[in-house]
Amino acid sequence: MTESIEEVQNKIIEEFSILDGDQEMTNFYIMELGQKLPEMDEADKTEDNIVKGCQSKVWLTAKLNDGKVSYLADSNTAITKGLVSLLVRVLSNQTPDDIINTELFFPQKIGMDRFIGTQRSNGFAAMVKQMKLYALALKSKAEA
Image 1 (cartoon, helix red, strand yellow):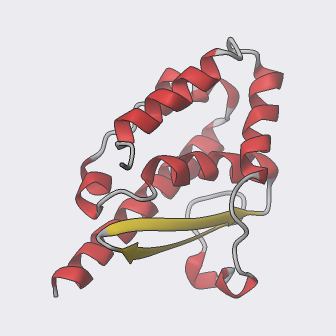
Image 2: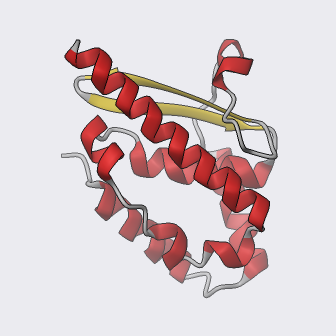
Image 3: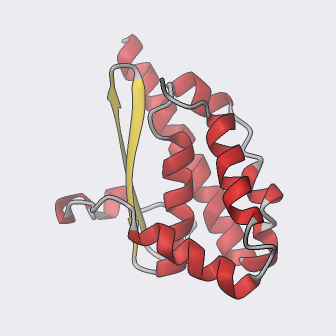
């Protein structure tokens, strides 16, 4: 049984709570998470797959399998790759409707704004928006 978006977010909050707000440890942990992201095919690292609004390069693709969306992502910076890996973890293997309608509460709960700057926050918002747009597009295509 797939965990709900809420359950995955709660797990992430729990993992980060162990770090007790230590900025250095948190950054290191985020970079470590990025290293665990499944390898993205070089062929998918195209201009079309770049998330607009990110200072770093972030590539993102999505496909629908059995009614669930799966995302692949990569970035040219370690921190950003870690941040997008959190989103992939939360939103992959969920239905398009769940993705479109979800409110992400984990960034606020783990105090993300404390350890990523304004530009990264804007980039993070752009990644979330792109993931929701992909879910919407896949849903429309599936219903067509």
